Length: 176
Image (cartoon, rainbow, N blue to C red; front, side, top):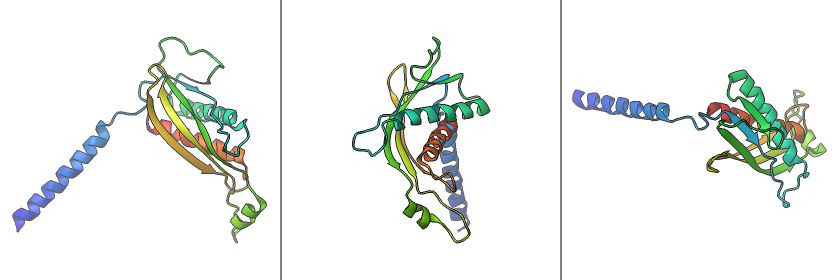
């Protein structure tokens, strides 16, 4: 009986060690990239969103990734495609994607989300599909979907877009 318990404990410890070893051994997805270039996001014709939302999304991503980059020292430069040249020798991460959802707040949504204690939850939503690409090879490193909503008094799609871009910046930070 004691031998079975001992062997059970050994198996559990070996499993935990193997899993944690795999987690530590996994190389960061965006390690080694010095620069980020963000393309204007596509707005499909079947998505009820303004054509300008693709440009607005790209600008929000540039802003949020720059914020995180400055705070955590992630990249040498973060630019929107076509605004500046990336110096030779930089390893470039290209971010592009498309708008998937653009839902403006409605009065009904605001009334529905109003809680008894005076808190107003957001009723505006924004979703986008992201592709993270090695610019030199064109290889897609990762694809992610982010869907965000507005919050409290900032019940606008513009704010939901900023939150979406921040979700992307956090994802990059976690994988750098």
